[in-house]
Amino acid sequence: MGYTGMYIQPPFKAKEELDKIFTWSNTEKEVSVVKSATKGNEYYAAVRIRKEGKPEEVIGVAVKFSRRQSRDGCNFFYNAVEESSGPVLKNCPVSVLDQLGITDNADALLWRKACYENAAKLKDPNSLRNLPAGAKVTFHAYFDGGPYKKGDRVTLYKEVRRTTCRKRDGGRYEKVKSFWTDGMYRWSEKYIPSDYLVLEGYTSAR
Image (cartoon, rainbow, N blue to C red; front, side, top):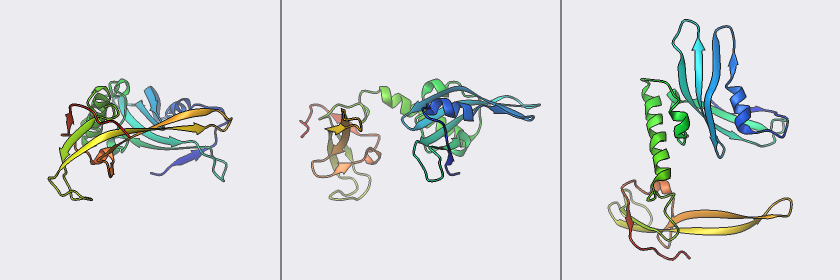
């Protein structure tokens, strides 16, 4: 399923508008939001579905949304995926996950498991995201790439770059970007295996 576009009178809040989208009813079905949250341009919701003569369900929904002006007049776009379809987005907060009903759908269970694991990583001081600038990790490469062969020992350190940016109104703000590097190449976190080891001591970031 692709993106759905619409025009919403500004100013508006994405979470409130998406809550409205997932709250509706007709003669056969009643849909409402039990709990929802946004993370950046991602929206997650526990959605209650009631159908006459059938047990009530509370399912997970993951939504990617964006604000942009299109030629046809739309200024808000969203792409919603139910948990049973295996959403790519897996950052659903625990507060939403805990509201979901019982399910035996394999894709939904895998999605919930991944979301719980990602939520736990946010609290882990040794997670790649939470390690401070200069932290060092090491692991064995699991593929051939660049100067490394599969099985080679790789050691990376975390570098943080801060850039001062100008706002449209003339003000300024600081943009912070972190990345992992071996001193020559940058490594995306998705290429760092989960069994990495955190080395004691830190390397001064450039």
